[in-house]
Length: 219
Image (cartoon, rainbow, N blue to C red; front, side):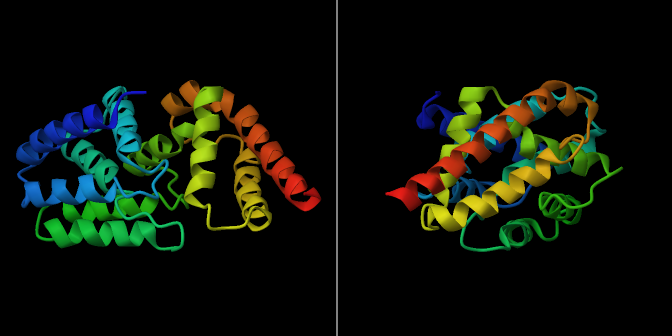
């Protein structure tokens, strides 16, 4: 895995270029917030490596929307999990609010806030920018087996405060809801890249959660 130091430097340079190109206010203060919040100790998955991965997938995206819409998506990728606390249910709203705090009078603010809120993964059908953002956000579900397994263990680590007998059924229900969909992805690009691997990844994690509960009850 690429080192955190490399990721941090690469992201800082990218942010500086993006902020200058979009004429964002307070670029250094925003970078400090990004670097600090995505480096919080309890973030086993939702960290700078995750943002770097999301941005790489965005770089490789074919047929990007026109320039302004593309800027909304990239800014939303930077901010969509900047507030992340597994004990709260309003992380997306808080992330959007922090963006507004920094750039409330900027032309990109309102649309980007709406994009961030779309990562609650409710109805985004027919909304192209939202569909791209949400597909990138969920792309880990279709990752190669070993990468997915590292992700699943990192999510459990972020929820380590929840006893396994409480965590497992709630997490399993989320995964089963995804399994019941014809596809968890909206765009043809995401479906082609990631959908095939999703069923085996999710089935593996559901089985792992069941075994973990059985072990806890029998120990």
